[in-house]
Length: 282
Image (cartoon, rainbow, N blue to C red; front, side, top):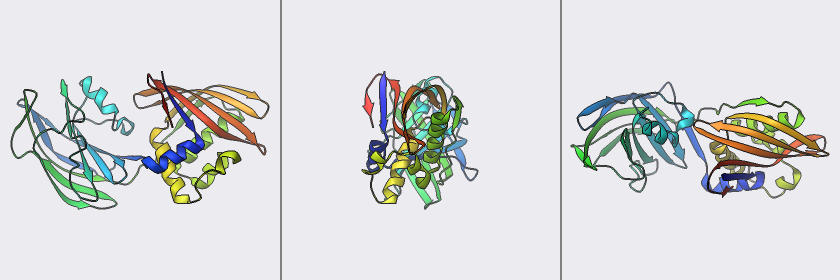
């Protein structure tokens, strides 16, 4: 199993490096155009984005999908034949496609990842803090792996972040409630209340700049489970251990959280999630 271990201090520090992601879908979004593969044309009707620093991965799909499935969940959906999509990454700084990043077509049964596909042109008419508006197209038909494809799509996407929605079920004792409240402060980016759930031994080593901590919270937001069942809560003196079952889109995990009672308040010391085969610590 892949062990995803989250120490509160380490999580925030890593967040300062990775800066986290934002995911979005909005009523201001629009898509008009199509993707053609081997003579079959599919209208692209939905748009989603995934943000890493000032780089925005845009995903255009033929069917609606849950925002939490962006970006990685789309791979599985395409393999199952549930979605057809076009993906590319744009830099706000250069207002151009990132050639070193993936630009992919997901068109079951063919789909690729981390491969630059075809000759294309991106025209941007607006790219600011709130909106990205443009058009991406292939000047002529392209060929990849024996398949022929082309696309021509105009789009607009709101870059405003949507609030992360969390659901908690199961145990409702004091440590469980404290953990749920902690997660909700992270999801809301509520730095002031987030600090109330961090033990003193952890806060002493955190950055003093509030903006750096906010960036750390953004990273935690991008990795946390959104649906959590608290299975057990075992209290021993001033410590408690919670066992969890969590999910986020297609991802599922089993988790353990260590809680510490400090000045009469339960605080989150460490959490770990088993998510796969490799071992990853953050």
